Image (cartoon, rainbow, N blue to C red; front, side):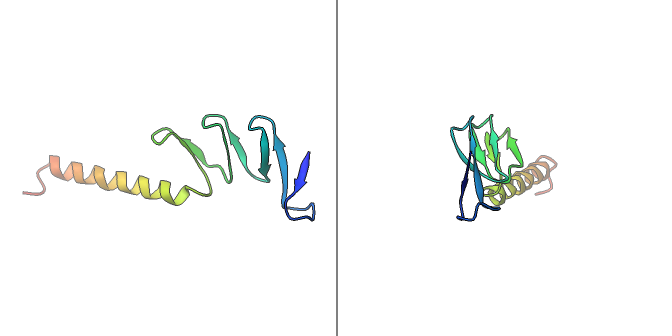
Length: 83
């Protein structure tokens, strides 16, 4: 079953997803680990426990960058680089 989101029945159609018991837009994926439908699904992050996709990719990338900065700071602290 499909429901046209834009009234044309074309590229904007939504499809029924039995696992999520809801409609999902074209290109969205049901993530069984998080039990949610995610647009432009990339992966399930084991550290945050969330599915990474279209709406939270910038936040995830910021999280990864900050973890990297903390790692570098830890290495510098442990090696005595700060004096």
